Amino acid sequence: MDSFTISFKNQNRIINNEVEITSIGFRPASDKRNLQGFPRRMVWSNREYTFAEQGMQYLVRKGQHLVRLFDVRDSQGATYRLRQEGNHWTLVTIKSAGALA
Image (cartoon, rainbow, N blue to C red; front, side, top):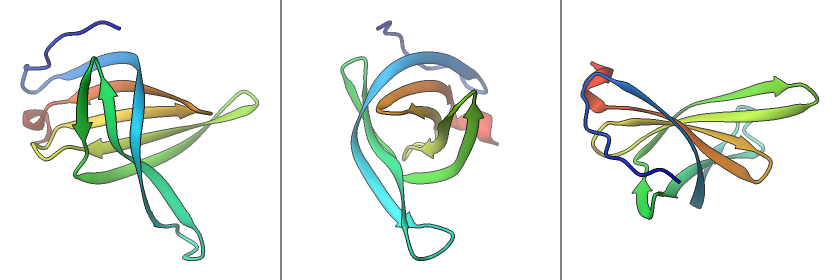
């Protein structure tokens, strides 16, 4: 995996690297009878990231299978977009906290 520092404000950085999700959180699904999982912690480039809040979740059909996209935010306000395809997770982009204003 490539390793570099994300330090540019107002930038949406494209990453597209496989990551390991080490913790999953749960919240009630829209039907209130089931639970919906979302990533709480990941390891990327030998560094652990913890997410303070879960934002949007998207379900996308890609050919015959479904892809789940998650937008999660860390305690500094940076937003991470993660893609789940089966058991594989990919960090798609990081948007710095300054880009959210």
